[in-house]
Length: 373
Ligand SMILES: Nc1ncnc2c1ncn2[C@@H]1O[C@H](COP(=O)(O)OP(=O)(O)OP(=O)(O)O)[C@@H](O)[C@H]1O
Ligand SMILES: [Mg+2]
Image (cartoon, helix red, strand yellow):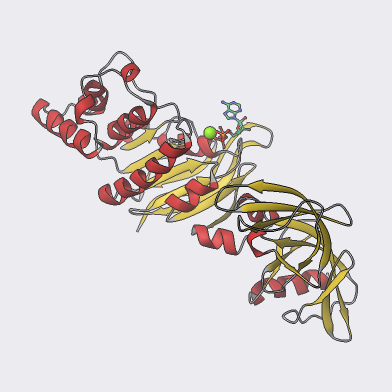
């Protein structure tokens, strides 16, 4: 069942800035992530769902009821903010109980719920302290407890882990996922961090410049990006993108990258003129071989469990390759990057749109049409 639906929701702050028309459906019990770079409209989207920001046009439905113009307190939505927004002069207990007081719940019930959620969140020993007397991770858990205690219909989180150190962030990611499954509260989670998106999301959407670029489960976004934006946003280090040329000779299709040419057995096209394309290769798919694009190693980055090797091509393009730590390569080494049609992506040069991925005929047809136009 659809829990939350956004239809053509628009909020324009200035010309072309804000949220420029988004459509999405979040299912009951789902952990849905809105991912995107700074300024793409994530917080604005969340604030419109919560009712903290008015909507210029479009519709928002929660539990099949239109809530577009409802005041926040009538929406039964909890939100966790990036900076926690705890009340500094209240104890942890008073912070958690606050939303229940607003709901005018009987005292004994409020206290019971507070004790219960504090136990679940590992906060029982901290109930009498103030926010100034606990750590960042503990503050984070208080903010989550305060949002969860009233059993909202929908749970919104805006980059809740960004103030924590890397280790605690990793720990809280696991905790959040576990809690969300335990409470089964439909959750919309905003982040610019692709690791958070892929580890937490049942489904995710990627936003850019106020619009949704692509939606799906995180693996789909990674495996079949619709364009170079998605392709390079997901994956660290980002996918390598190189200029190439596609042409047909005697019925066979070839891809030329600098001085190297490979036959593309999977592409059958009548294309008359060569076309410029962008070639995408993920760092973990880059192989070295006897034949390929000539490159020289000019930087090595050590990550402990693996290394990234930065190669330069003759034309000055960079190709990053993920390798094992005990790689014998040294700076200045010359080698060849072999290219396999099964692991590469082809994108349109102008729009960046995906035109080829091995075994995905759908994109090839679109590409053929473009070639005729
Ligand atoms: N109150 C406002 N007045 C004018 N412009 C605004 C306002 N709030 C947001 N914007 C602009 O709208 C765009 C989207 O902002 P938003 O805060 O939603 O981005 P975001 O994706 O949450 O970014 P970040 O990751 O940096 O938090 C940005 O260009 C921002 O400058
Ligand atoms: Mg934001």
